Length: 393
Ligand code: LRH
Ligand code: MN
Ligand code: MN
Image (cartoon, rainbow, N blue to C red; front, top):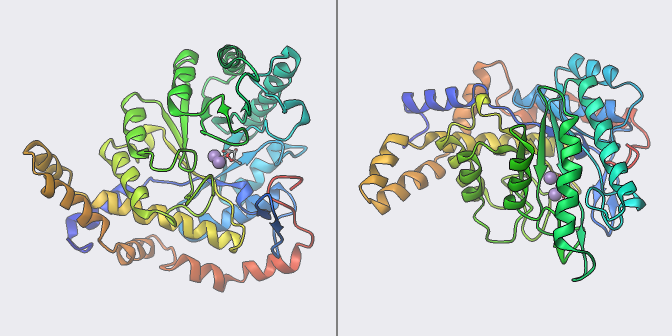
């Protein structure tokens, strides 16, 4: 297979026509590990500057028109002004992420806490996030629950699920008509014995109890090593409950490295399941987001690279000849079916994507164009005293 066959070119162009990737506001601030946060020149000093950086990613890729916010990291006095600024920059506000992991009150839990007053505080935080959604036009409330236990016996596993169901119900009831609640799972960290939403099954059960507007978020870094993530994708799509991805890549834990950097083949396998169920089309409602930190690499460039990595992988997934694959599968042609996937994965689509960008008036090489634009030098000169990702920025 070559990427230049006319029908292949068309399939990729059509498949990517309305495919977008949402970028996170927190990717542009300084970040690091628990050992060291590195400072980089020109990092944003406030949410407006984060939005400006996010807009650069869209300007050069044409594929990332939304930026997710994290509250309170991106708290501002007037969210309408922030949304208007985003629109001026050519992007819009995407998901609103709540934050339950930076308050002393939540040491033993937030939405699951044994004390009703702490649960009420955590629910109230989500009501604030819903207000932000109304003010910015955001449709997705994204909840990652950092609650869990470090020691067996520390609290009742069962009671925590009951409390969580009750808290989530209160949040769900406050959603606007066209809002969705996206519930993210993670199997470990910040607690290490048991997390309260450790896996897709737990997230799905809570979503099913809540109603149609509750969907699961799959963060690719939140599974045990070796987990077959594409199976989870296929299963959630089958039930119409895959709300969003947090894309990133990992070698060991929740590394938050650039998507497609550690295991491009896994990304391809995931996107193959997406394409098989037409979930790359906006009508599927799946929000493809990045959730990454660029600790040691330049941040805007890191985001551009990540968007390109997803587009490349998606283009390869679109190359797979669905009819031929189905025929091989039904015929029990093991090697034929596997060969169709491997051919697609091994096809170099970079030239094809550059051609298609050019057709749309975008740069063939977005990273080179960004570097040549002078934006990075400008922000390094203009912004003195940029902040850590999240905290205070
Ligand atoms: C938790 C997580 C979640 C948070 C983000 C900062 O590990 O993936 O999505 O909101 O990191
Ligand atoms: Mn995440
Ligand atoms: Mn994470």
